[in-house]
Image (cartoon, rainbow, N blue to C red; front, side, top):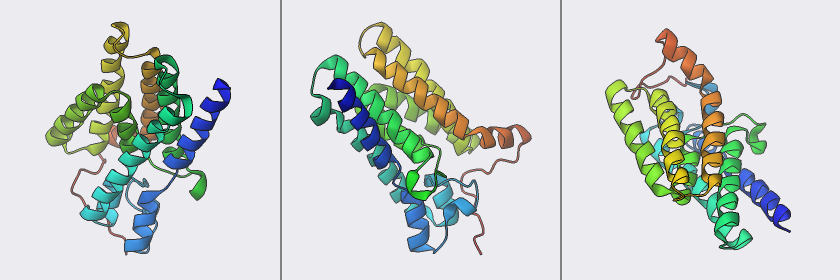
Length: 211
């Protein structure tokens, strides 16, 4: 029974996370596939560069809601028991990030999972989400590299979640979520890491020609 509920949560979380709002925005506004330009992603940053600021912000909100919505499904599906709810949250959140990164609807070529992971984290444990957001904003303001801010914010999520679990303020499942999501996000940023090392990474505010 419980295993079936958790599997169902994973499938639903994946299908919600896989909705490609960035690709939809690019096709509706500019008639392009944003994955063919810039960083090749379908998240806020690449949509801003290829389609425009407003479209990018709307995509960010939609991606946040994907993660939050997937995690919120745990309440009606597995109930309010603290242990099971913790694993339900973790599995649904992981699935949403995996869905965003490898979406079945568009041949598994997706984004990097930052906003979707952040939305999931807000529902799972908002204090850690706040810490991650502060790190992200600080790094981007100092360096103007969204990718670097995303990577360091992801690491901050994992490292800051550990003390809350040690002192039993959060279930062990929350660290499992943070570790899995950090692994996916850093893996998806491997091209950005290479460009950061070679100093060829694009900075925030740069536009990409689409015609």
